Picture 1 (cartoon, rainbow, N blue to C red):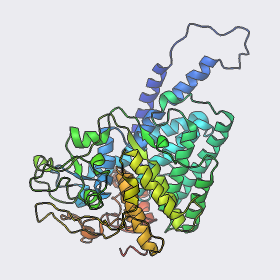
Picture 2 (picture 1 turned 90 degrees about the vertical axis):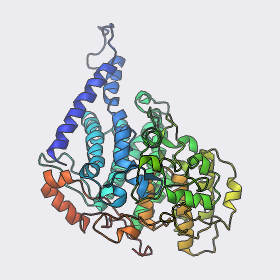
Picture 3 (picture 1 turned 135 degrees about the horizontal axis):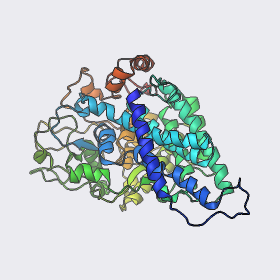
Picture 4 (picture 1 turned 90 degrees about the horizontal axis):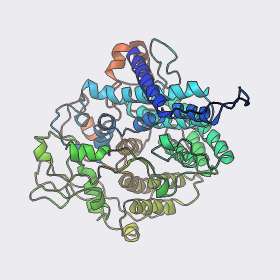
Length: 525
């Protein structure tokens, strides 16, 4: 991280602290003359909490981007098309979908996370001495942000951020993950003890648009995040993956199991609505609609609007990795149904059920069988979207992903998977894994970066190839991106650490070098 980022962090901290000071109302009450002068008053305690609490909203809004510009640059232009939920509907000839994104686009996710999340985290760490429940909460938010960033780039600064005025050294992705596990373990232990002693504590409700200051729910989320991270590394470090997954599920407070505990940020304006409805820069992706249409999925009208493409099917997504001739042309394709006031989702209960299902499939102790947890994931997703027909869907043993029936023959494509829905314990492991990950992918919508990471990790679901590859690697047309390049600002302003980061990456700094956890031998690429 370069000196420019440090200067920006200081500016952010100063402005946030100024806002915090205005949150504290003045009082005309003087201290009791007889009180112990070393004992803070209730007003002083609350003033300190308010000053510290004021750093959390910004961290929450950027850990998983909610502000529209941060969301577009950090999620919508990368994870959404790579995860095949939403396609770019603008005429940008340089973009991530065609593997030639502009410099500013590549810099943006990195800069936002380090400026906006680390800024607040550093202040909380300094003011708490790196201990206590508020620091534990800040650690969970930090890991949320950095897990997303490391899965975009690979090696990132983590353990030594701020240790040098010359720029932060990078950790290998393996070390980043191991440090994140340690930080989560500390935070979970700290909050579990605190909640046990203070079950009604909610002083942070004012600053928490995710869980309204409910630290019990934050523990469930932290355990669920730990479970997500454990499955992410299963092919790179299966022993550690099993250990951390079983720890998360067996924890006394446990993981998210109910849609009422879904992790979501009540940001004033939903960024997906902004991308698709207000700005018109996104349309539903061809892949997810083809899968859902083939499965006769009752959630399809809950996810997407009907298409206006003449001669096309009722629902029609837009291919990822094409040249868009015009926004008016792209407007005809199915869009999202997200409303302006819908919260921004971080993690649904359905994802957690599917994570446990995969753990059970691998023989881990997950509190249920793979079949039961798989079906629980589907049921939770249907309930989340108020869709009926889950029982019939689960029992469907013949429907398969559909063709992509665009009236333009150059865009149309045949189905690329034959995987069915109904669970069959007699199937081979890879068949069951494809079935599980495919249904998980449908249920995780709209978490594009997670969808992309899971597709990179497992090879599932199968995606349509891109039609335009403007990058340097011809294999990307069918193999798809495996990461995004390191920020060019880092190469220019933090060169020594950037050079070390490339060594840690173990390959060329481009879209097609595998990340540390990307080691599934069965993918074929």
